[in-house]
Every structure is written in structure tokens, then in C-alpha cells.
Length: 70
Image 1 (cartoon, helix red, strand yellow):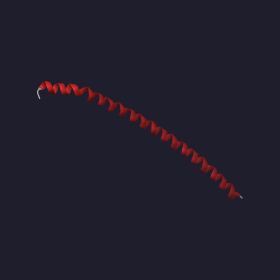
Image 2 (cartoon, rainbow, N blue to C red):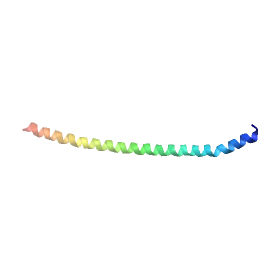
Image 3 (cartoon, one colour):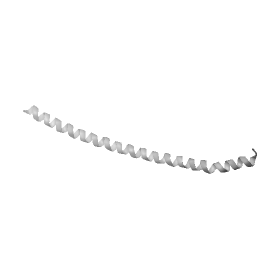
Image 4 (cartoon, rainbow, N blue to C red):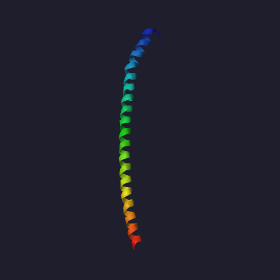
């Protein structure tokens, strides 16, 4: 292969490789955004569960105290 053929091959494949690279970078950014959004949702769910469990614990404690007073 001579220099002209190598140059034509590089010229033909460069746009495709550049497009794939840009696609990979965009998908990586979107996955990072999704991961942070999911982490925030799980943190919110954890806080909700903790508050609900605390409320259930308080109700059970109140009922037990009431039974112990009898």
C-alpha cells in the first residue's frame, strides 16, 4: 500500500470513529446522570422507610406501655 491508499483509509474511517467516540461520551454522561438520579431516589426511599418504621415503633411502644399499665 502506498501513502495515498493509507490516507484514503484513514480519511474514510476517521468520521466513523469520531462518531462512535462522541456517542460513547454522550452515553457515559447520560448514565452518570441516571446513576445520580437513582441514588437520590434510593436516599429518599430510605428516609421514607426510616420515618415509617419509626412511626410503627412508636405505636407499638405506646400499645405495650398501655398493656403494661393494666
